[in-house]
Amino acid sequence: MQAKSINSVFMIYDGGMKAGRPTKSNRSDFARRLRDLRLAAGLSQTQVAEQLGISQPSYADWERRNVALRPEQIEALSKTLGVTIADLFPELASRRTGPIGKARERFKVISGMPRSQQRKILDVVDALLAQAKGAQ
Image (cartoon, rainbow, N blue to C red; front, side, top):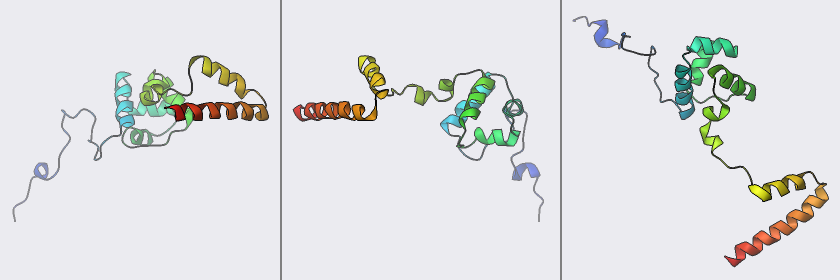
């Protein structure tokens, strides 16, 4: 039996590999963006992990797979990387939330009214919307 060279059996790290061992799974969009933002900031995983008060392997998971982050972790992460939360989650920044212009202003006032008055106003709005939908 002929011995095989370890180089022919395993892929070995070489100087051309940028970030050590390659991941075995595809990165999520967030993980890829997080890695790119960290590299753009000129930080290592260890430096970011220290700023966040977590271990480097835990932070490495953030750059490899989907993780559930707490709001305070998201804020600390954006501060550490020197980016906005919208930079971390651009898909959320482009969403419109609620009515715009005058309608938004009026609904803001309505939200401060007692619930019984809100219900009456919403009944009228619902009726108008149903009427507009029927006219289409």
